Image (cartoon, rainbow over all chains, first blue to last red; front, top):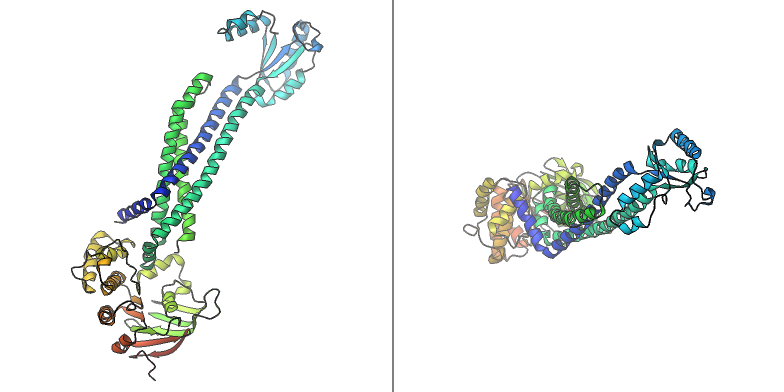
Amino acid sequence: MRVQFVLQEIWIGLRRNLTMTVSLIITVAIAMALFGTGLLVRAQVEASKSYWYDKIEVSVFLCAQTSSNPACNKQDATEEQKQALKADLEKLPEVAKVEYESKQQAYARFKERFSTTPGFVQSTREGDIPDSFRIRLKDPENYKSVAQAMLGRPGVDQVINEKQILDRFFRILGGLQGAALVIALIQVVAAVLLVGNTVRLSAFNRRRETGIMRLVGASNTYIQMPFILEGAIAGLIGGMFASLLLVASKFMLIDRVASQMQFASKLGWGTVIAVTIVSICFGVLLCAIASFLTLRRYLKI
Amino acid sequence: MIHFDNVTKVYKNQNRPALQHVNVAIEKGEFIFLVGPSGSGKSTFLRLILKEERPTQGHVHVAGKDLNRLSNWKVPHLRRRIGCVFQDFRLLPNKNVFENVAFALEVIGKPRRFIQKVVPEVVDLVGLEGKAHRMPHELSGGEQQRVAIARAFVNRPMILLADEPTGNIDPATSIGIMKVLDRINRTGTTVVMATHDAAIVDAFRKRVVELEDGRVVRDQSRGVYGQAY
């Protein structure tokens, strides 16, 4: 009896302000979709970060005849210089591994990487790419001390930190995430206000019923429940639309982009499902709490 | 059953008190007319019993409980033991007679079987046999008030408060309403009825409490409406 009665009240309430409910659902759907997108981008950034940070290296390029650095004086680094640099690098506590890459190895790697663009390879000769030390750091954040130790040393042309290049890319992703979350936040505010308005209309439409309920001694929970559930159901439907959008974006966008850009770590379905669940729960809670708070203003107990 | 202990009520933003130093004791099973001109404090008196308002000063006891000390979450339980009837009936226009009466039990979570059994009994008790499926707009004013009384009484309250129940009803029909209230009073329910209706008060010869400017100016058993001393 109780359940059936409450459900009936909710149905009446939702039907009475149908347009309001629809707009609420749309707003919640957009808010939660953006919120979920933010979470997904974040998960993507985290996953690629841990993948890439394991692989990135600091490269210490050595002087070669082709170097433009005046300190090099258009001469190759000598064997002694190389030995001294290597010994010093291995002494640094931040360094996990040091590898020497000769000009031949560097050229071979270059050829392999750009094998699809023969023009590039043809215009480059062995010896154009200087030899280098490839250094794997224990923590990629600590590259500065290595750079400082190496820069200006005889035989060193330049120090390149791959992390800086990657970080630029991550910053773009981070910006996307931030933008999605900011818009989501604005939508959340709109959703809260809409919930407030819907509840106010609902409370006004049902003031006779609630007045009588109060009078005959219905408990506060019983009076408020239909309103709160009304909000929660709108939030639930909105959240479900949002998860549809998220799943669609996983298919249409993330998978496609990932296959194009060779993201080493694809976002798995596990993450997407977790994010949709979080979005739905957040949508439901948001609406339920917003209706509860507005009820206190518009429904005298 | 209901005790007013030196009760004063001043509404916010008003200088003149709605009730001043009211002392009234109403015992179980009594029938009381609360009379007095508009604005004399009759409605405030009833609202204090329901704990819709709190006294500014003094104490209201209902069924042995000091309402000042009654926590808010217990108020619904207090109201379940008090039935209310108003001048404007306050029926739900989209529900029929049976549903209107059943509503009062549904919202306090009574089981369906209980409702199916009790509601028809009460509908008969107030004299609406065979009209359980009429809508409110198909009923006369007197019949609508009977529905409201049925709704107030269906949970067998200890107290029935009636705020000018005959105010919208012609004198002949009012007698019928009063007979229903009397029948309810005879089941042991305490009835407090605020009214302007001199003819009814004079005809029934029950206890009369008269309010004027928020003060009790008369408390007389088997009284009449007008000044009688």
